[in-house]
Length: 419
Image (cartoon, rainbow, N blue to C red; front, side, top):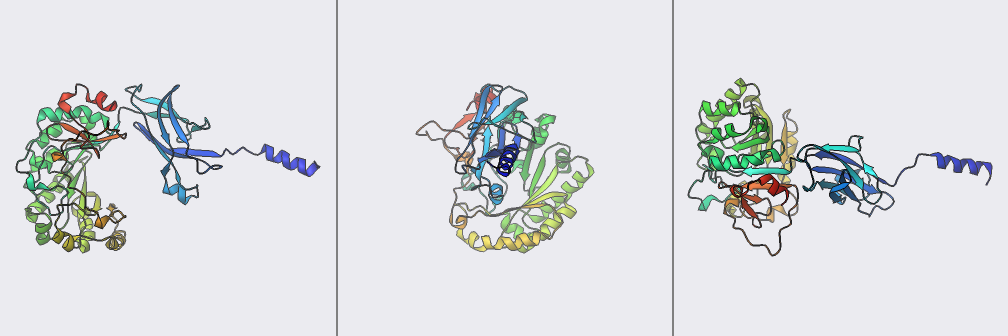
């Protein structure tokens, strides 16, 4: 080898070694670690990551999830994301330090340039949707729930609510819902229940209300001083005639009076919960939505407006769909108009894949009867739960396969962690 070739070979040997396998931890919270890892020499390979607590593996995941940001960055086909959930057995009941190792190479992934990650595994549920009633005071023609067979309002008892609160430290901030599908102000003890929540857990709790029944200043003062994470208010129109159509049995003058009083009280209480506004978009209110967003910000203390598409439920009439439903091609124009406003908002556009032709079953989770599965259900962690008024817990997306009553569990945290 001549001198030039020798120098060139030596220069290559002294360059920093770049391993073919690379990746990073993007997010680490509670019992879950998320990130990506790939092998540039073998881009079709799907690597496995193991979470170590000392010398013990407490979780594993295959990095095969699609990450559009990786695709845009030119990293293979982008299917190198992972979400590693820590299995409950052997975990401590306080913060722990773990490390994430790529099984095929023995190399460690870093989080914020650190190899060791500190997690709090006491939080292991995504959310608990705890409806304290089974009914609503309105019969909105686009509602996810079919109330045609609901003839009696069932109220959650204080005993059941207190029993559910044993799980509140197992959800993250904003992860305990006092209402999911129904109207919580129908419960005469809503404010009393809020007072039962441990003060240091109030930031985990929120609810949604339609403000359609007259409420007192005292009720709103209780909300303002509650310490809750936020309160959602349904606000689809400021047109009284359209309000009567979209919010059947509702009166706009009652709603507006409630909202004005709510804003007045919250403005006078430092640290009152954030107010968010939920607007379902229709043909009939499409032109009005930017004005709704502006008015909610200027007059009703909006911290954020959420614009939602209409769920295509089987009990909704074809006539209502024809007169009010938007189509996917209507959304870009709305998005463009909202982008001109200086206010925070989020848009929940309809999904693709023929959404408008797909009819979904009604969200009557209170009526679901358990079926005996052919095999033992396999639960995807972390879990999300629904809680009926009687305390029955259902696993979200597997409502018919499993149910257990909170009153039958001496230690619901241990039971659910081992589920």
